[in-house]
Image 1: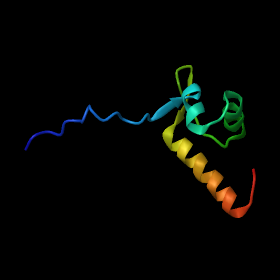
Image 2 (image 1 turned 135 degrees about the vertical axis):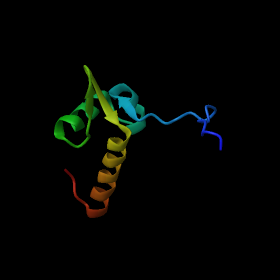
Image 3 (image 1 turned 60 degrees about the vertical axis):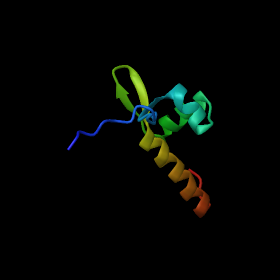
Image 4 (image 1 turned 120 degrees about the horizontal axis):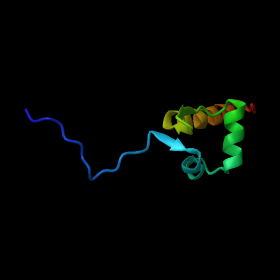
Length: 75
């Protein structure tokens, strides 16, 4: 049995995003993203002095928006 070798031809999706990298993903401005972070609607982690947004937090935020759209609620 040969060990699994990662396929380097296929780029991996980021697991953590800097705020500047999350801006085009969410189609939002830097200010809006920081407002979401302060409001607790978008989770972040810290590594040293860097504030990073996990990809799972982005997915959770989009799911939150979808739930709010279905129920007609807004935060």
